[in-house]
Amino acid sequence: MSIELDILPVKSWLPSIDNPLLIAGPCSLETEEQTLATARELAKDKRVFVFRGGVWKPRTRPGSFEGIGSIGLEWLKRVKEETGLPVATEVANAQHTEECLKAGVDVVWIGARSTGSPFAVQEIADVLKGTDTVVAVKNPMNPDLSLWMGALERLNRVGIRKLVGIHRGFSPFQETKYRNYPGWKTYIELRRSMPNLPIICDPSHIAGRREYLYEISQKAFDMGFDGLIIESHIDPSCALSDKEQQLTPADLSKLLDKLVIRAEHSTNTEYETQLDLLRSRIDSLDTELIELLAARNEIVKQIAMYKKNNNVMALQIDRWTKMMNNRVAAASKMELDTVFIKILFQLIHEDSVRMQTELIDNE
Image (cartoon, rainbow, N blue to C red; front, side):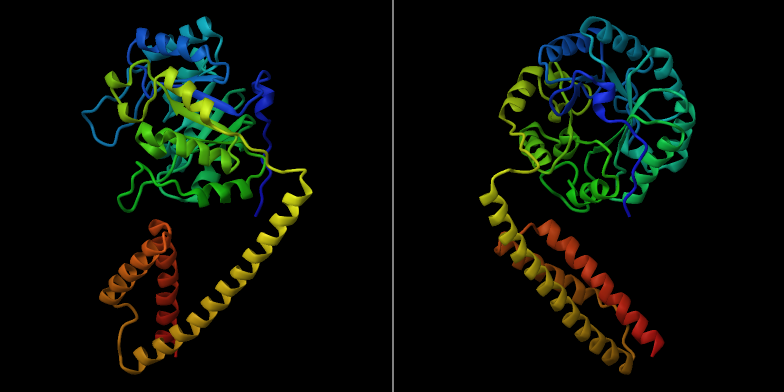
């Protein structure tokens, strides 16, 4: 189902924007000197349109740096006065939101942990009601599209029309080279479901390490994202949070220089013809996949009847583990993404168990 939100385009609140939206700044504001030094350098690159900086930092466990607190809002005021850049920070509750409104913060974002709580989102939305604030919403920790959409809808229903989605990846279910699993499928579903919503990518939180920032950023633009929110610190080696994923302003400029922003369509008729041919082949292969899945289901039904007749339960964990290991190993040999294959066969097997359970119980 497609939902047209009552929102305004980015150009309405950033009239000077002529490139993809880029929000940049340190993970955390640590000192006034660090904040202003970073902002001054970022402001030199006209591709940066908004300065970001965490004031309150929700941490998984106590004891780590949890943000400088409200004093950081005064530093954001200084940034805005000196550089002219709009400023942004994260809010997690009503108090944070009220303080940001009083301080004149231009953009607030709701973090992944908060997006996962409809109560927290509604609390923030109630404070923002009737304001002209720009609000960005990160995806929840888990790939729950309904939670992400629900947060955006709650804000829209109280009159927030300057909305942006932020894709920052999801908690990985197994070790990967990235800090968070990209889960591009969920972004695609949000784009399809809310077609007029601007969506930007957070390569810093997906990558977790600066050496992966370029590949994630380029992938994001190749997939049609409207921009990036990326962490930049005047001296990442001294950062009090997430030092491994932050770039200096100079290195950020170098990364931006390398990125290629491609068009959504082409006027080249030969390109369109070849694309149609390749898409036709994809359509045929997809039809074959569906037919293969239907044939597989028929075999699953036969297995279910054998199990029923022999009083055997639907799920055998040993078989499942062996099958998954075999499938992942085969995928690896064919240079397929093993994380994708694991997710795919989890879904297929879960549906197989569902069918077997229903047949064993009902016949």
